[in-house]
Image (cartoon, rainbow, N blue to C red; front, side):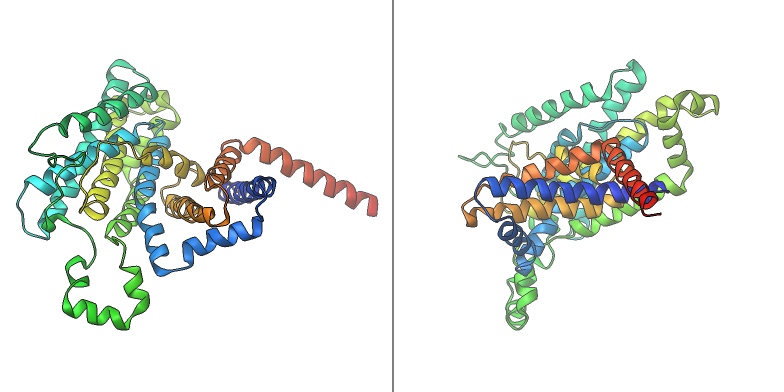
Length: 372
């Protein structure tokens, strides 16, 4: 554990291992074989092409909200408002996707940008309150979560957006969808082709969309901004030491607003992708789906590394999706939440792992001295 990167990888690996061991104990107490349970989870992720597709689909919003939280954290801010930004992002996407009439390629781009813009504004408000009035971003972002949630409730009370006798909004126009090969899958040519390719047929059965590609692109973009650009340097400098950054001539207030605006745009983009790629045939519902809070867990598992959020998001989504199939064994699927909770607990307390590592190292040295 000489380098920071190796140390973070070690902590993450050991934390995941501890989470699985602790989950095994709980499963054993509940009368379920841990080996059988983890087999069910594994098969629930990789057993069918459609399972893999659903894992990837479910990973997209928490990868993006995880990147959002990680980005803000790297700049010295704690974005606990990713959930509210996700909600207003979905509002922006549904308004652009349903109300606007645009060509097929342009329409989804505009709708995605609308969602990102709404999320960016929502996050920017938090950044403005922080920079102008020194309002703690944790408090203000929590309040913005609820404002975003009740704003979605309020908008769905209008007849121009809400389906009659329904709790959902109208669905987006087909031209706004980002689902991959949506029309082709049900066409005569598509059905004939998929009939001969079983894997692809099952993989495309869920609402596979461009969201996963977008999430990966955003991870690399944010990594590049933080590591390779002047803006990233300034944002990180403000996060590390505001006084030193101010002494160096960096505008702290401006950078705080920019940081939260970018973080909010990422979460808003997550909401837009869900509306345009997954819920296109259902519409938007006034509900909190928890993706913003899941993103905080993903960011922690990833060590607040934007690229790490890709793998952490896939792990989180896989455990949640595969864990939902534990009911096959007659046990509770909520056990997987315990596993994830233990993983996050140990990652959030690296000092405990340091103590364990030091203790093991000292014991090895003592054993080696005795042998000599």
